[in-house]
Amino acid sequence: MPLRSDWSTATCPIARSADVLADPWVLLILRELFSGRTRFDELRDATGAADSVLSRRLTAMTDAALIARSEERGYALTDAGRETLPVLHAFARFSRVTDPDGPWGLTVSCARCGEAAASADWCTHCDAPLDTDSTLWARRSMGGEPFALVSGETRAPGASE
Image 1: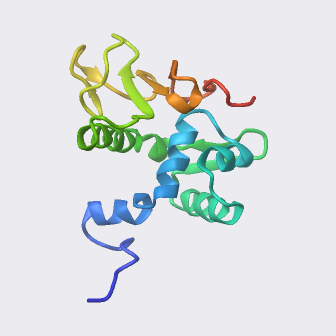
Image 2: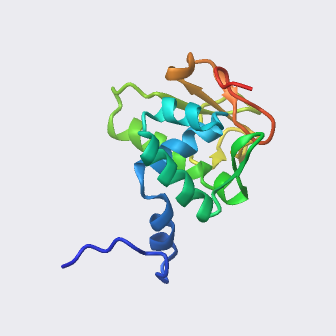
């Protein structure tokens, strides 16, 4: 059976979404954009992607309307890009469930109540959604302290102005 590499016209929404999101580089770039890194060099350094790989992924993400680029501010998540937050949370939860003794480089918690997230998109403690305005991430690679996600002007620790 031949491999299928383009699901952009599939009738299944999961297949169409996979066409855009089922690339590890795309997921890592999204992680960094939510963390406040917006410049090409910041994204390259944080993900470890080669310039050519990063350039191709950023172009594809722009074409898919996940991100927008401006000369002044670099790359920014669009509304569609912000909708991927629960996907990243699901990956973080999956890692914890499948490797409970692992290094867990990302901890997700609710900014309203401070409790660790038990769901990818909902705080079960205060019964409210987890979105860019109500989610804190703690990343070991960024010092381990919780920080608010980028939802406009906010930038994470270590991300340049």
